[in-house]
Image (tube, rainbow, N blue to C red; front, side):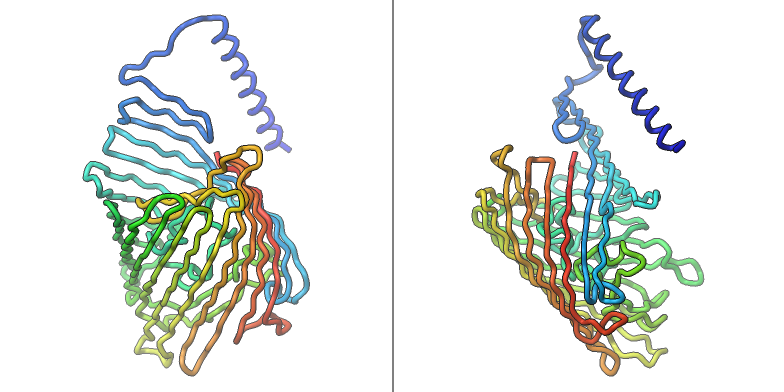
Length: 423
């Protein structure tokens, strides 16, 4: 109650202050001046201020994704239907440019339990155009779908490939350096990250290294041909890896529901069993008008430590996706970053309507120990009501081999819906 009263008081105070400012502005005529270049202020989708000479800018924005999901079978521990409503993402972001040659980006995720974490905290040097050097906390650049902002992925959840090698695509903590650039029809990025908490007995950290190259001879919305290659390696030999590979099988609610959600192990944990870890991938996409097709392949190789009786572990996966915008708008595309972007509705009253289908396949093998597989079918619809509001609905059907829930289920169904607001 105290928090509610405090927030209520804050809102009331803010409203009164804003009202007083408007009254003052009406009663005292005048002008706003700066000590430098003139300012451009935009309030459509967040708050942006920039100088006309493009040397300085400042932008505040955010993201809210409210989800509801219902699932059964292998998605729940006892196989019975479960459901969960939760905030998938609640994020506040601050970004801009300083003296033309420097850019910054800071974004914070707010969790349901009140905790916060950095999504990104980075500074970039731009003076080496077309090369950009980034330093700080950020996700490594690996794969087409992982490069797309979570706001504008076609499906509500990304494919199984991210689960097969999560260390490649997401560093919730730690620091890194990345060099990237694009020119004509090429984009490339290379970097290393130092994950937090992965240290040997002497306190020496492990590092992960990643390289991504993209060739896109057609690189504009509605006319895209995209081919890419990715490689990443981790020097985990300092601390050894347990080789665990967990997956929500495309349904986030399985981990949000602590009582009955079932997040499966495609490969179980074996403490210190692996001292080599590398992954490589292929990516391809084509788009013509409102139609887009994309596919990716990933392979991860875990090398068994000589001190254990385990064998090398291999994880492979792929997905294929086709999407079509019924109202005719194309998906956006950016060569700088090698990624698809938002669908912008041409009619702000009707919005843009998009249908899609995706098939995922994943396999984890270790001779003499396991041969587990998962197959997912995802069918969905997205309504881009306007530039800020997006509503999604997904149906997911899965079948697994070699793994099950507590009552032996090896298949399941799920339905999820999302309300997204971006500002």
